[in-house]
Length: 142
Image (cartoon, rainbow, N blue to C red; front, side):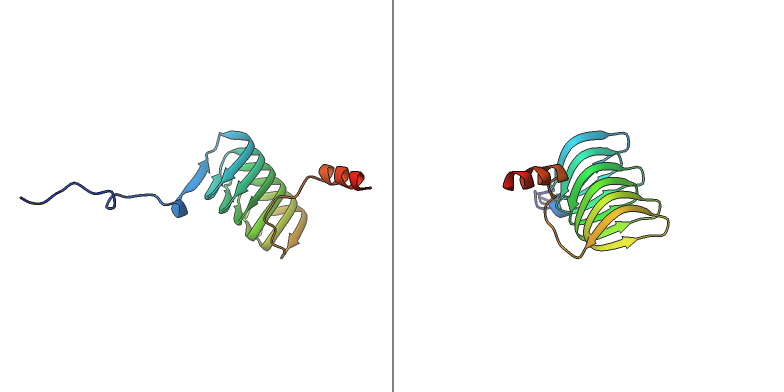
């Protein structure tokens, strides 16, 4: 008499891929390779390779060591290794970055620490091979 009160699937709240964010909480450690199609926030520890199609956020308690590639990045915690950011890398106050950085644009706030090399302006979509692999390939080519 008063109509159907049951909600249809289109009326229920849904999560879209564009708004999804992966989170690694403080106290969690991952060793190996992580591939994320969406944004990812690291408040724990990652030791290995991280490939993200969206934004990489390393929180104030986050630690990443190894290789990482992403579209954009915000670092508030610690990163050591090779980092490739296709668009903007934002290094926040109290962040600590050590290693090889390749990015389109770079913002470093006062109080942040950066030690290493930075190549800006060239968009690179994949993580380069380790120097050991280059040496082996060059030796084979001779």
